[in-house]
Amino acid sequence: NKNVIILGIETSCDETSAAVLANGTDLKSHIISSQIGTHQKYGGVVPEIASREHCLHISQVVAEALGQAGMGFKDLSAVAVTYGPGLVGSLLVGVSAAKAMAYAADIPLIGVNHLEGHVYANFLEHPDLRFPLLALLASGGHTNLIIFRGHLDYEVIGRTRDDAAGEAFDKVARALGFGYPGGPNIQKAAFEGNAAAFDFPRAMLETGSFDFSFSGLKSSVLNTLNSARMKGEVLNTADLAASFQAAVVEVLVQKTLRALEKYPVKTLALAGGVAANSNLRQALQQELDHRGISFVYPSPIYCTDNGAMIALAGYYRFMNDDYASWKLNAVPGLNL
Ligand code: KG4
Ligand code: ZN
Image (tube, rainbow, N blue to C red; front, side):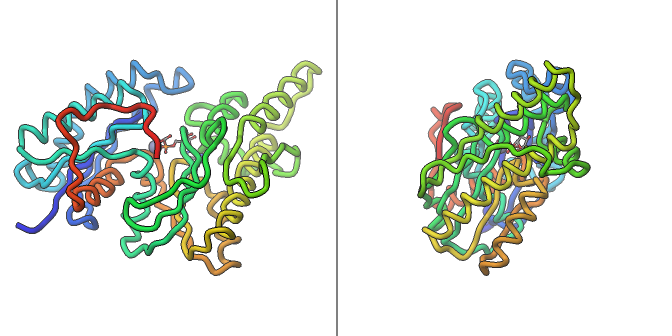
């Protein structure tokens, strides 16, 4: 049997997800059990509740993924699991479950970096994607520009110095009275707003830097809201959302273009939860079309946390015989 069948497991934050992937291209099944409804009433993810929810759902989610694929543990080549970065309690549930399954089935265990997984989400729908490529990863916890020279061969050229892009979306959304997660709600409100209504700062940092900073922008929105409140003024929420979103998008786009000048690759791959933002996609598409650079991004379901991307990143580790030991632990602060 030459087929390589990977079970991918993701539990780093508030999604319990499992997927079965054959030969790095053929997604046999994909189950995502989201806890968003549970955390919404607290305005964000409550770590203790998240790990308990993962415990309650992990077995069922894996059973459904195997069932939908028409497979059992005996058909698997390996179990790949996110071991960081993320919430330690949440990660531990996935890591422990994956270890138990791989050990019982007598197959390799593979540890996957969640951030690599996000970038690999692009290969699910574009298996023919060529290297070298530039990846813009913007999620709830990270904002990175990464040069990929080959599979799992990459260099981080830019990172956020404070808040991540998604974190800024979530914090501003909360201040505007939207629920969690903030990104989709800001995008929705922004459709009705005027992006030029407020002139929020765009931190471009020193010349030549590919780093990001979003905390100044976040503070500027919060200060604008507070001073209006003190004066008894009511600001237009849609205008605030649109102006904030425009500032984030402009910084992400300009930094990406700057990186493409120094690293003249032919492809940009967008990844992470913020990659689901349609304004960001449109702005990048427009700029990259002008420059003849091809642009790929995952479908929204593969932008946010999912097991399919973990199975795919795990597939490439498997092909390199890059197995984890039975001592694999959760690493909440794991970096690229
Ligand atoms: O990648 P992800 O699901 O989880 C992490 O690994 O962090 O990203 C979640 C982040 C949240 O901050 C959420 O607000 C943001 O992605 N997000 C969006 C959109 N959809 C999700 N941000 C902007 N626009 C969206 N449409
Ligand atoms: Zn993520």
